[in-house]
View 1 (cartoon, helix red, strand yellow):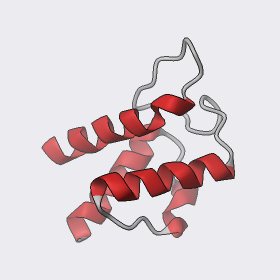
View 2 (cartoon, rainbow, N blue to C red):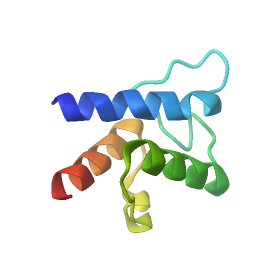
View 3 (cartoon, rainbow, N blue to C red):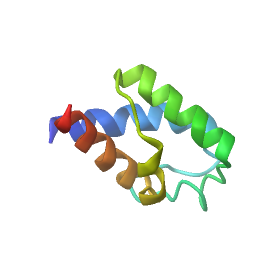
Length: 82
């Protein structure tokens, strides 16, 4: 569970600049509906997470990512498989 918590913490830091003022980000935060991310912002986030966690995120996982929790779980799988 420690790996998941570390991933979540990293995601919160990475997403912070994209969070609208007054919104509290959490595991169930919808990355498109709540944060209003467009494809360019998503790619910047993916690139930042890749750099910070030293992993490569395949773009084919992105359709399965809706919430912050979804993204953290996908990254957790990648780290576990790596």
